[in-house]
Amino acid sequence: GSLKAHAAARGLLTGCAVNAGLFRSDPAFRKLIAQQYSIVVPENCMKFGYLQPAPNSYNFTDADALVAFAEAHGIKVRGHNFVWHEALPKWFNTTVNKDNARKFLVDHINTVAGRYKGKIHSWDVVNEAIWIKDGRADGLRSSSPWFEMLGSDYLDLAYRTARETDPHALLTYNDYGIEYDTDEEQKKRDAVLGLLRRFKAAGTPIDALGIQSHIHAGGTETYGKGLRRLIDDAGGMGLQVFITEMDVKDDGVASDDIAVRDKTVAEVYGNYLDTVLRGPEVKAVLTWGVTDKNTWLNGGTKFRPLHPARAQRPLPFDADYKPTPAFFAMRKSF
Ligand code: XIL
Image 1 (tube, protein in one colour):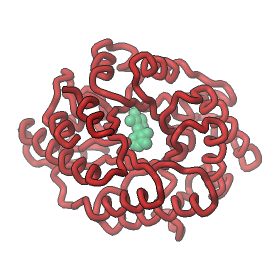
Image 2 (tube, helix red, strand yellow):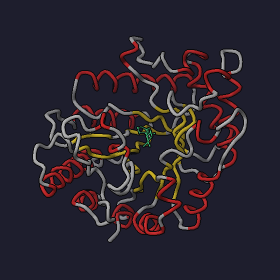
Image 3 (cartoon, helix red, strand yellow):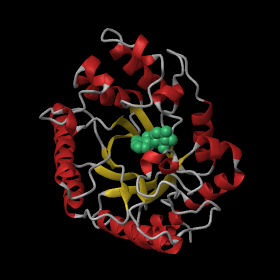
Image 4 (cartoon, helix red, strand yellow):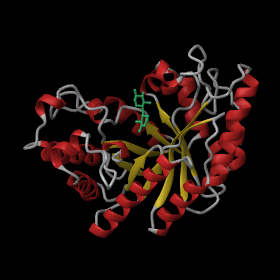
C-alpha cells in the first residue's frame, strides 16, 4: 500500500515538498505524488521572492499549477511561507524600508492568502523567526529584515493578517534546529515555546507548530526527550504539530556502501517517526522532497562536508523513483 493509505488508517496526512521544475517536466514525478501523498507543499514557488519578482507584481504560475493539481487529485496543500528572512527578492533591500514594510507585509499576505483562500490546509505564516545567536533573551532573530524594520510586532501582524484573509487555513509557526537533545537545541525549543506562549497571551491567532526535521544519520547526538517534551507542550497549548520538512542526511555514515547508508537512514526515519507519533499531536508528516534525484541537500558542498563526492540519499524514493528502505520505515511507523 501507499504511504498515504497507511497514514490515513491512523488519521494522519503524509506529504512532500514539490520541486516546480520536476513537477512541470516529469509526468512520472506527478504520478508518484498522486499515488503516494495526501498533502503537498511547494519547495520554493510560494516564497516571497518567487511570488513577487517585482514590487507589487505577482507571478502565480507555478503555485497555481500545484494547487490545481492537488485539487484535481484530492490532495491537501500547505502554504510555505509568507514571512522569512530568506528568499526575499533582489528589489527588497532597496525598496522596502521602515516606513513601508508594514504595508508590504500586509499586502503580500492579503494577496497570496486571498488568492488561495479556502484551498490551503495550513500556512507557514512565519518561518525560522528564532535565532539564539542574535543574543536576545526571547531568542528572536533580530537580524531578520522584518525584525529590523518592524520590531517583534511583525510576527503578530503577520498572523492576524493571515487569519483575517483566510480563516480556513491552520496558521503554523515553522522552525528547525529543535529536534536534538543538545543544549543549543534545547535553548531554541525554549524560545519557540516562549514565542507560542506569547502569541497565546496576546490573542495572536496560532494553530500549529511545524518541526522541520532536517536530521542526520550516523551522528552521536540523541533525540527524543526534548523533542517529545516540545510536542507535548505544544499539544498542551491546544496546538497541532506537523513534521514539515523531514529528510535524513547520511554523510555522517562512514561506509560508502549504499545498502549500509540506506539502512542507517531508514532506521533514523523509523525511530524519529515512532517518537513523534507516540502521542496524538502530530497530524501530518511531510518530507522535503520525494526522490533523491532532487534534494536541496545535494545543492551545494556545504551540505556534505564529510563526503563531498558522495550524493546524499535522504528521501523515500531513489533517483529512479524506486522506494528506498526509508519508504518502508515510514510506512511501518504509520
Ligand atoms: C530550501 C529549498 O529546498 C532550496 O531549493 C532553496 O534553494 C532554499 O530553500 N528550510 C525551509 C525551506 O523552510 O524553505 C528550505 O528550502 C529548506 C530549509
